[in-house]
Length: 511
Image (cartoon, rainbow, N blue to C red; front, side, top):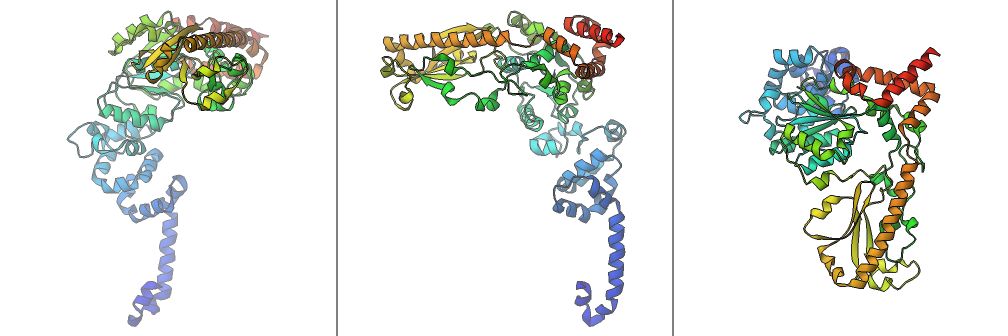
C-alpha cells in the first residue's frame, strides 16, 4: 500500500492487487522457510533478535545446518557473527570444526577457532573478548589451567577446596553457578595465575569447555559412605538464617544459659532435627550428583590421566602427607601444617552456629540475670569465636582462648582495636570463664549430634527394607562405576560397605 501510494501519479494503485498477491506469496514462502522453522526450534531472547536474523538471513543461511547446538549459538550471538562474519564463517566451514564438533554432534560448539584464541597476535584473541561473551559463544577456557578437580560431593570437597586456596591455587566452589566460575577462571588465566578447575556432574556446559590436555584429580570413597554423608548434611550458609537466630550470633557476658546460644540441628531436605535416609534418597538429582562418575569423565575426553586418592587420605591425621604428594605432583606450595590438620568442615558436626561474637563490657560482670542492653552500648570489646583457623595467622588479631572440638580448632580472638582487654584482668578472666562454658556447650552439642548421625550400617538397613530405593541406587551405581570396575578393581575392593550392599542385593534378588 505504501509503495502504491508513493507511485500514485504513475498508476501505482493499478498494481495494488498484484502487489498484495506477491506479498502473500512471499510471506507464505517465508513462513515455510528454514528461518521460520528455526524460530520454533531456537530460543530467541526477543523479537528484535529474530528480526535481526530475518534481515541478514541470506548472509548466514549457509552457516545454519541440522547441527542444532551450532544454530543456537549463532542465533544467540547474531550481532557478533555479523560483525566478524569472515572469521566465524572460516572456522565453522573448516574441516577441523567438522571433525571435532559437527560430525560427532558435540554439545556447545565454539564460534571461533580455539587454537587461534590463545595467539596474542590474532585479531580476536582472548584478551579482546570479555568473559561473559566468551561464555555465550561457547569458547573453551584459555590455556594454562594445570589440572581438573573432578567432584561429585561427599568426599571432603569443602576441605580440599580450602586446602587448594591455602596453597595459592585459584579454584572455585563447584556448587556455585558454572557461568560465574567460568568468568573467574577465564580472568585468572588471562592474569597468569595458578589455576585448577573444579567440575561437577551437574555442570552441563563447563566440562565441555575444558579442551586442554591436562591431568585430573579425584577423591574416591565408598558409595555407601557417600550416602551416609549426604544424609547427615546440615542446612548451612545463608539457608541457615531462618533457624540460627541473631541472638545466637551476638551475645554478652550475661547470656550464661548457653543452651539458648546453640541452635537445634536442621537437616538438608527435610528441616528435621535428626538426619533421615528416606527423604534424602527420594531426591534423584542429589543421588545422581553424589554417585555419578562415568557420566562426568565422558564429558572431558582430553583428560590425560586421573590421579586417584582415597577419602581416608584426607583425614586430619593423614592430610599433611597426602597434600605434600599432591603439591609435588601438580607443583603448588604446601601451607602451614596446622592449617591442614585442623578440621574445617563444620556443617555436619553441630558447629554450624559459628562464627559468633561475644561482647564483653565490664558492667555486665556483676549481673546475675540475662540483660542484652549492653549490646547497644559503647566501651566494650568484641570477642570473635570461629572455626576458621586462618584467622590466627592474621597480624591484626590477638587470640585469647582456644579449644579442640571434634578435630576442629575453635579460636576466640579480638582484633587489634580491642587489644586493651588484655590490660583489664578482671574482664579478661570473666570473658575466659564465659568462653569455657560456651565451648563446653558446643562440645555437648557436637557429641549429641554425632550420636544421632546416620551410619553406613543404618544406610544398609534402610536399603534392605526399601526395595524401590535399593533398586534405584543399584541401577545408578551399575551405570556409573563401569570405569572403576574395568580399570580399578583395587579401588572397588577397598569399599567395605559397597561390597556388603552388592551382596545384599544379590541375596535379596535370589529370594
